[in-house]
Structure formats: C-alpha cells, structure tokens
Amino acid sequence: MTKKQCGRHGVFTPYRTVIFPGALDNSCGVVYLYAVPVYLPPISRRRFLTGSFAAAAALSLGQGCALPKGKGDEHSVALLSDIHIAANPEQIERSVNMTHNLKAVTDEVLAWPQRPGMVFINGDVAFNNGTKHDYAAVLGLLRPLREEGLPIHLGMGNHDDRGNFWQVLRASKTVQPHLPGRQAAIVRAREANWFVLDSLIQTLTTPGRLGEAQRAWLAAALDANADKPALILIHHQPAALVGDKTGSGLEKAAELFAPLVAGKTGGGLEDAAELFAILRPRRQVKAWFFGHTHRWDARQDESGIHLINLPPTAYLFEEGRPNGWVHAAVRNGGARLELRCLDHAHKDHGQVVNLAWRNV
Image 1 (spheres, rainbow, N blue to C red):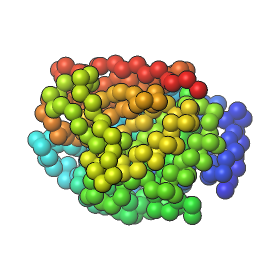
Image 2 (cartoon, rainbow, N blue to C red):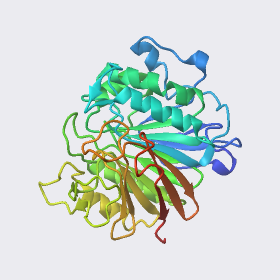
Image 3 (cartoon, one colour):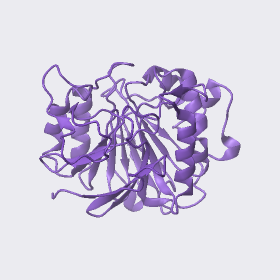
Image 4 (cartoon, rainbow, N blue to C red):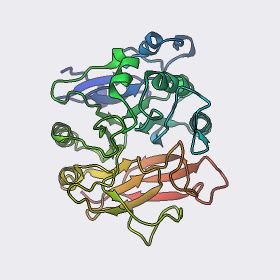
C-alpha cells in the first residue's frame, strides 16, 4: 500500500494510490486507485513506440505520462463499449469495419467543443477471442486520443483475453493478492467516483460473473469512497435481455431487462442479484453502465439506480439500432448523456437523456 497526498486531492485508502498530475485538473490531478491497472496514460508523439509487442509493453501504466496539451472538461467523459478491434484493419463483421468505426469516434471525441476529460471503453476491446495482435492494433488506434492528453480506462468483456491483454501491456500488470486475476479500478473524478469492474469469466463464454472476491472488494471500496456519487462500469447487463426488436431506441412499452432466474442468465451477469444487494443500500451508487447487448437504452431499477446500456462502437445485432458512443457530462445532482451515432442521419443521433441522482 502506498499513501500519497496532494493538497485537497489527497486520498488515504487501503488501495494503491497513483496520482497523474494534470490529467483532469491543473492544480494537482485526478486520483486513480487501482486493484489492477486498466489505464492508458496520455503520451507525447515522440514517446509513442510502435512495431512490436515489446514496444507496446513500453506504454506502461506504471511509467510517467505526458501532460495534456489542453485542459479537458473535468466534468465530462467519453463512454465507449464493444469496439471489437481486429488485428486486420480491413476486418468486416456484420457489414461493419470496426477499425473505421473507432477512428470515426476518435475523430469526433477530439473534435468535441470542449474535449472530455477521459475515456472509458467498457469491454469487448478485442474482435473475437482477444489475440495479442488485436490488442496491439487497439493501442495504435488509441494513439491519437493519448497524444492529445486523454487518459483511457479499459474494461474486459467476454471477447477479451486477460492473459494476452496483460502480455501486450505486461509492464502494467500488478495484481494485488486480494483480487487475483481480475481487472478493477476506482477512478476519482471531480463529480463522481467511477468503479471499473471485470465480469469476464472466460474468453468466448457469453455470460459474465464478478465473483465473491471482486464483490467484496467493491463493497469495501464503496464504503471507503462514499464522499461522491459512485458510477459503476461493468461489461455485462444486469439481467436477461428481453423486449421488442423494433430498433426504436429507448423503448417505453417493453421491459428490457427481465429478472434473473437461477441457471437462466440470458447472457447477462450471473451474480447480478448479489451485486444489487451491495449497490442498492449504498445510496451513493447512482448508475450502472454496461454494454454487451449492442443496444442503447436507459432506465432505472426499483431503487432508483440508473441502468445505462451503452451502444456498441462496432457492429449491431439488430438492424436499425444506433451504434457510436455516449458523451456524459456529470454535474452536481445528476448527469447529461448525449448519444452520438456513427450515422448522423440516424433518428436517435443527438438524443439527450438527463439523469437525476437518487437521494442519499
């Protein structure tokens, strides 16, 4: 355990504390509390190394990072999910080139009037089974964001492979004894604490599971960081997927998530009931963001927790639905989500969802 204090941003917790100056705040920095790093720091162009896995590994989460060129909006983040990047930049799946899609999203994020303070990619980073070459390609595609000073936080999905991911970023692997073999992080921003969790059971196994150790870690981390709203990022959805297939965007008539039944997860999170038992009584928990379904949706559970299904950046399962990314502006009392479709002619492009946090 390390303890570092930096003025009003100093944090003392039972977790490893790392401060990257200037990431979101020119006075001191955002505090990142890692169980296992899932963070790509900003870089300078001259320090970006290419051409081999050894070079990719040199982009270590443990090494220093370049200061951002311009101050990002410390209240806003770019939310991506299911980017499904293949080693072959010409790879096509369901009539979609995933590399082209990520490049288009990257260009739009960088062109945003006031650049987001950071980027989250909520799982299924790799195309199918998480090869080392896939992750090397991901690093190359994320280079423009990092060169412009945006820190990037990566989560694992069912198409990822932790071992290959860690080999490409092997200098970054610092698994702590209490949470072996999982990637989880706390990112403390100005208006909220973001909790990035790992629901990958095994590569190409569709359902997800956090497991007892990770749930215990989360409960302790939430209790130790109750000073701000807690926003949860998990790749898998909280329940079995049901509802219409009309592609109508935010459905009002049909329930999107059915209650989980033992042995019938619908490809969702197997221990969702156990997770909700942790989240619901901790009133600082305001929202759960997930992907996996390749849908866009927003609703609240019975306790007032917002359930936000992020759209895929890659391909769609159902024709007519939007793909792209979400711009999230987190303010005191809630958040403003704006859907950014890759197809700007899509009827849902620019759709705004305002979230009001449940009371403490």
